[in-house]
Length: 173
Image 1 (cartoon, helix red, strand yellow):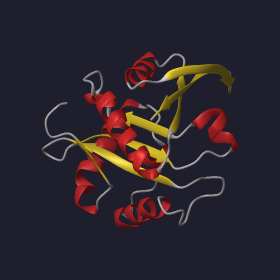
Image 2 (spheres, one colour):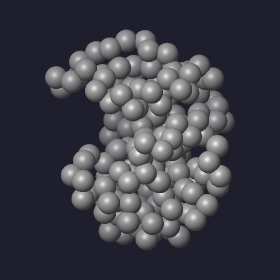
Image 3 (cartoon, one colour):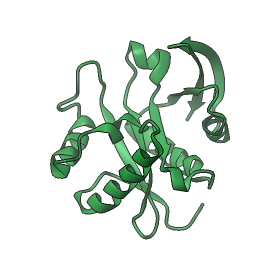
Image 4 (tube, helix red, strand yellow):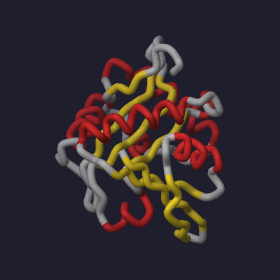
């Protein structure tokens, strides 16, 4: 594993690093993934408080389930990516969203970080008590599919949502 990489809970102390990552992502015009990166960070302390509450089911938007957010940081506390672990599946998540959503900041992609981040997150899933993890990705997102497969993901099915083909992978822990 690359030295010094770890998952941490979102922290007020990393406000500048977080802002830097979001700005980099926005410059690309790409969608911010996972969904937690789309939260309003104008009041950073409130955003961190909300994320911590979501893991306990506090303050969740309608239709959302308990969700733990982690940031992948390097030894210098640079945020390389983010991952959301949903503690359970509702009907929508069982179809399309799965237990885990993740993303790596644009400048740090294709360096193996997503694979490491997912591996670390699967350990967190075990702690939460999730024994079978569902992860979905667009069929066109070959990098994500490779990341899931490298972490023991087994393709269950393909389906269509909003005109796009997506794949459903299960990882047994």
